[in-house]
Length: 285
Length: 285
Image (cartoon, rainbow over all chains, first blue to last red; front, side, top):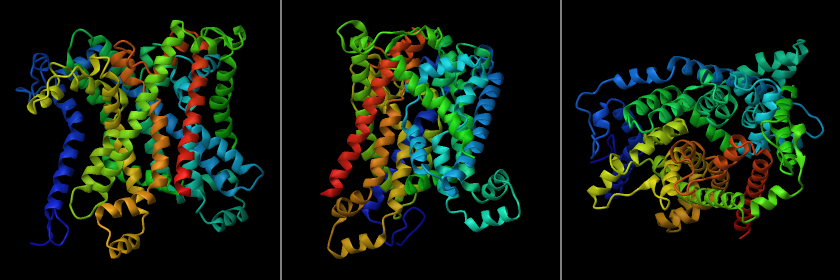
């Protein structure tokens, strides 16, 4: 017996069978919570309260999803999440491309120091600056609004870092030729440099979008209970408080399923970009 | 070219850092302007280390965060190496599927993770206790007992994050030149000697990076505490991000909250310096 679909080695040993078993077991365990989430969202309220728990609902139904719409404005929440994630991502792409280009291709005094100082902010947990930032944004008149959620996040160190790594290998001749043709620096960034680092842009866009779709602490703080502007993750929190005591697990699970879908769908289709960017950021750094 | 990114980061990160430090020496209500802050010298810090309830709560939150962070790192690093080896090996199929499943959990918003796991942990209608009962382990209280609540949150954090660190390890593994393994085999090394003699030493840089990121991520734990446990039972899950926000934003004690944030920042700097020092010491040996 040689090779096969499951065993690639010339002669599968007992150890190989054990490895395969381990892989299957871990994959099942890792996927279990999400599977449980979806299954629970299809249970009837009676089923979700049963002890011991029901593993397969007798009559799977979507009524919990309908109930979600009765408690939170799901459509509005999705729209808010979409606005926050898209606007923030667009800002990050623009600022990161420009700064990454400058750090990769310009020579000026203090370049490495400035870069190091910028990168250091990558290691700063947001809670450290949360209190004065909340006040600053209030001063600017952005509190309790989507603008307040978006504006402080329009530039970040990870984006600058990633762009510098990739733009550094764009040939100087390409940029010099554009300069000779009289192209402005902004034009060079967006129509010469950007097209040659598309995979990095895709990766950064995906990361930024998912990160800001999922973000909780800052929107919660700056929106100050203005539930009309809540993104879906905050509305999900409201769903839980509404549900506390009522024990309607199906409702909460339906809401969670809705919130998880967009980032997960993005991931399934664009997995390669995510993984590649982690690999390149990790290895080159 | 640098102006947009640098000015945004300056206004929304560096100014708040300076303000946090400045405010930590003041008594200040977060609901008022910075001008209303009253200088109190080191009093906030004296309170944090004093024996009144402010100090007790802070010390408990600090300890909880340290335990939580330590446990997360100690579990995530070895686990990510093991999972990385499972994905990276080529003798058995399924590595890519495993990587996809593990990494997909990293895309799930923490709030959804918290909600789903709170149901998984449910002592009566949750599936985890039921599964344990099949192998003869009695029901656990998980999030409802002060003895196990913090560790239960560590487990859900590991579940969410380990895929990211696994991808980092895989990136590290692909960098190890194959001739090193061939040389080890010619010298008669077995699999275990190979792992400790070649794989682990060459993963050191990856693991150093992983350790730092894991620490930074762990101190940010917020959603499970804010939504599920509210810091309880009996303060067992009161971690710093939650505590600082509760004091500094909800109770509007901005000066006190800022002093806590400064302590967190200083501790992080110490921990990261220590991690680097340990890595350097090993390298010299």
